[in-house]
Length: 314
Image (cartoon, rainbow, N blue to C red):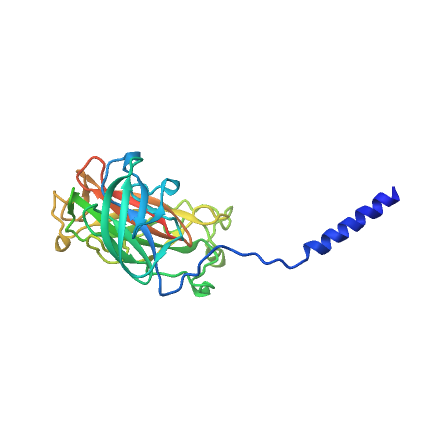
């Protein structure tokens, strides 16, 4: 029995020494310099809901970028959040093949720029829109922008990709607006100010559903334009949580930006966008710290109406 014990100890010692040996691990990767173009491809051509309208193959200058292993769905973006394809800047040919039959539906030249960008397909017969990705996450994060209670920040970018009808992009400039709940939970600031009533604690619901005023998210944008990433306050409704909250959204189009009461907007008071005969409103649960793009795409006066397609950038 002692022999077995000593043999076991010897084997364990030998294994420990072997596991401490330095081993070189190689990764099959290519460094991408600042002089390269890094891009994501968005598919926002107004199409009907069907798996056969997905893009099953994408080529750049005759080289395969993706196939059925990473399908480019309608109103979606590839290769994925925080990931990019890369190529040399300059003119390149982009091809998209639709459905399992791989029907060539898009064959256009695109001019890629240095750095990160979104290549947005909005019409199979037109060159795509190129939008430079206008943010980089700073590390370490700026402590002056951090909060330690319930109020913190997310960033949202709105892109106007709305069509009035097939082949006719909107001529209106859209003003994206948002609204949030002002004081859903009692905070440490409330405690320090003596504002928490008896029987309540930090993190308890206030019962106050008062909303903020409607606030502009950036400036009005024409078709193919972006607001850039704008900071939005997120006042979470669960205290011990990552941090997310409902934020409501709407779109205003004034007369100066092409709004026509009764036709493109509901009336001449609030100038709220009219979609398929109804007022356009929406809401999203926004998570703190996220960078999200709201692509407003589709046909305004069709039953399958225009709406926001949210894409998390980071």
